Length: 170
Image (cartoon, rainbow, N blue to C red; front, side, top):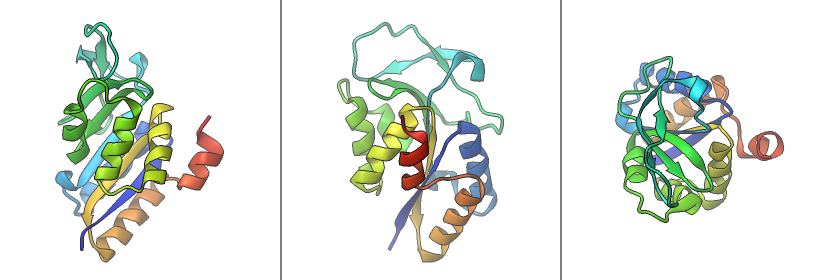
């Protein structure tokens, strides 16, 4: 039976490094979803319009996408009210890109739940992403690959929901 495992990172850079390590250890790009929030102008150059889901606004905002490791290939960028600017890649990215107007922050929680994350964890992760953190979700794992993915993510700075709630969420 295929499982899903998630790792939350306090910075996008940690998550990018962990994603690269997962790829180097035999996980495919189709197995790894990436969601990061708190994208700021100084982190990467503006490269195009930001797709907004949920609130009425100007669509002419710039999207800030980049990555020291080349994560930018296959990324989408959206603005979700209540969560803010996000970049995403992997299986969750397609679902985020397809969220209808009005989805809002509950939309990210729902998408995470649809991808195998418990409701409680999805709420923590959504709040963490809204505050600038990043989330990796590895899909289609078995007992062996789940343990390997967890070790890789923990070794690259992933924190548990308890630590997330106690130290990162404001």
